[in-house]
Amino acid sequence: AQRVTQPEKLLSVFKGAPVELKCNYSYSGSPELFWYVQYSRQRLQLLLRHISRESIKGFTADLNKGETSFHLKKPFAQEEDSAMYYCALLPHNRKLIWGLGTSLAVNP
Amino acid sequence: DVKVTQSSRYLVKRTGEKVFLECVQDMDHENMFWYRQDPGLGLRLIYFSYDVKMKEKGDIPEGYSVSREKKERFSLILESASTNQTSMYLCASSLSGGGYEQYFGPGTRLTVT
Image (cartoon, rainbow over all chains, first blue to last red; front, side, top):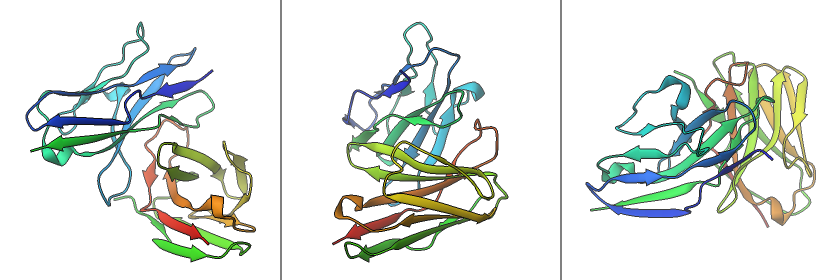
């Protein structure tokens, strides 16, 4: 079955600490994976996609096919990173499969 | 800059009413989507459309219908609103091919009493 799992509903870290938001997927083909973010009172927006291998706002995510993971990482969390983060998988039928989201709270 | 707009930010309706949620995008995107977002349940796809007058059911289409008469507009219809349809509704659009970024509207928070 095609599935995206974000094991943490809530993640709380202190400002300046490293942060890792976990995402595991189940998919038999070659996956296309994304991270979307929703800041408070803002619309959901794309943060990054694995095929572009870019770093946005200091966040990176590496696709690990062996572990079927696409964890989102940032070495030093900032208070403005507090948001809801969704991992998503794009299968062949082109309808995104979403994880349930992780709420990140960065404390001062 | 892509703009996806939704007709209302907040809506309160009574059980049994017919409800229309409108979404308009200005970037000539082929694909449009309706999701509902509930705490602990993430985003669930209700319907999507890949062209004018074309639609496909998502994961939770029961109790909903859609209309896409023009490329820029995608409407979600609740034929007879029920309290379990109280939710945040998000509209999104993207270019065709599916691999492209989905652009989201601000959402409509619907309360059915």
